[in-house]
Image (cartoon, rainbow, N blue to C red):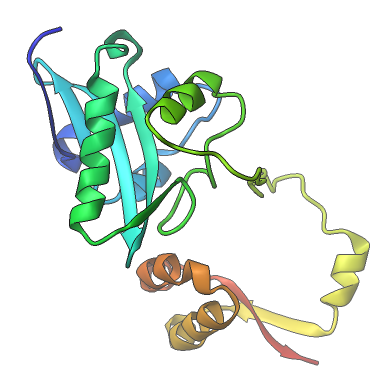
Length: 209
């Protein structure tokens, strides 16, 4: 292996190579460029070999909680310590920002998965050697909605409500709703709510008839 190092992710310089690395490494999980950029955020690190991107780690933190969102190393660069260097640098970065608890995936922040996807047994074995411990199984409630039909009983429960598109005027009430009912998502929702409402509209339940 040539000269290697770990540095901060540069979205201008690294975006194309990072997305290509994802596509090579995880072909079963296609991802749009915009979604990938949202998950990478502004706190990612990359590993390079001879100045070429060979790995990436994305992290997120909210207060003292943090998460390792993504850790990828190019197949041809594995088993030479590069992944461990990238992993350790990512956790060091989180500690310096005040985090004392970290998970794999999940909140805080926009995330790809709520944990490590089932079936990535080699990745799990590596992470366990590095000190990670896996607990309960969770289900990622994501599906293609193009053919989805709302069950009749669910539609019946919602029949007494009226809906309209959200606007910027609803921002404070939506933020309060998130904080009251989904407090674990507050760090994510407050970071994205303004951008979403300024660029588009969302349906919200208005009132009961």
